[in-house]
Image 1 (cartoon, one colour):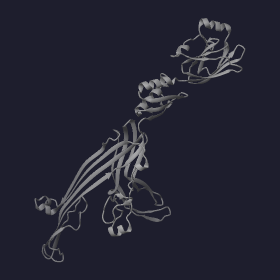
Image 2 (cartoon, rainbow, N blue to C red; image 1 turned 90 degrees about the vertical axis):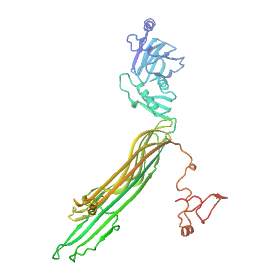
Image 3 (cartoon, one colour; image 1 turned 45 degrees about the horizontal axis):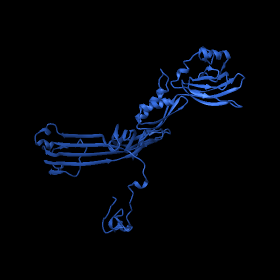
Image 4 (tube, one colour; image 1 turned 60 degrees about the horizontal axis):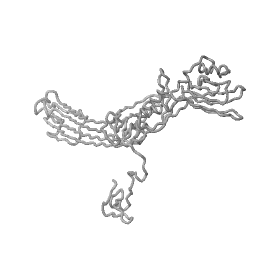
Length: 503
């Protein structure tokens, strides 16, 4: 608390020598001139029977003038660190805001009567900050409020970049010179003018072409070298690339049937010429909607169990791994119709390739019993995954990822030396050839969307009706066939397929 005695000669000296500080120190007029604008004037008329009570919002480092109807003798300020009182005359006192906060000041007459009670709230001048923001960010509708020493921004801006710029300006405005800006001192509640809900359409298209060729000759011969002593010679060349023949039944045999019970010379051969071609088409189109700045995930598929450990009782601990069509993204609407998109998409499927096979075994549990554990086969995953950040307009498409891959493998197995003989070397070898081509494209398209009525939306189950017993039994139909309506009745009958059919 600070008590200020005001004597008559002090007041007279103040008129000549200048303002007198409320704490009795040397005159100091710089605090009064600290305001760039004209100071506020708080005029107090006759107070009547009771003291006057006023509320004053005082900008930081600005001054206000208090004009009293009577001479004041004592001025009491509750918190001198927040508000300073400078006496100009006994009836005119200057209040200067030194620090953000709250305080109050009491003014007493020479007879001890309370002339005025001022509740003072010192805060920063938000009008200056609003003007700076309007100048730096034209077209924005930003309102600035203050809570203690923190700034609250409300209103609408055109883009996220404008919102970030406004927050940075406000952060530096409330930071004292020479100190590090405090981003936490600014609470931004700004919203975008455009739509803030983003629908992402992703198309994953993949084509795979495979070609496998096998050609091999197996020879089996028995020679009689004399004295009924046969010599048998077998030349079996496996298909080492694929591990086995494409088919066990497609083979051409020549020569005599071998009979090892008779000492004669017999020759038999097996020729396998096999070929396999295949085409795989994969198409996935996941769609997902999220609010700007929020993350969303989508998965259409399943989960398969993967053993992770085994306890002392032999129980297997399971962890489930997801597979299928997955989509995850975080959109940020930068401006009207401009979207920054962090997106990840994945298409995975179970496959026997790279599968893990456990042979199982036996072990003794804690009770000394012998436990037999069967083998476990864990399937592998064939995954196509892409993750990136792109910037697109609403409705614009871009190839997020692409892959063109060609893989060719060939093995030739045969007898050393003989397989290299021109022409005849083919009788002593087998050729295994495999070629694979993969083309993958991932296309992403974001849209700014708004909610619509339910009648404007369509579902895959709309207009589906199961077939009647007659149609199912006699026409083998799974669903009803229908056409255009006339007079409220369905046109057409079970005579033939008319209209639209849901397969």
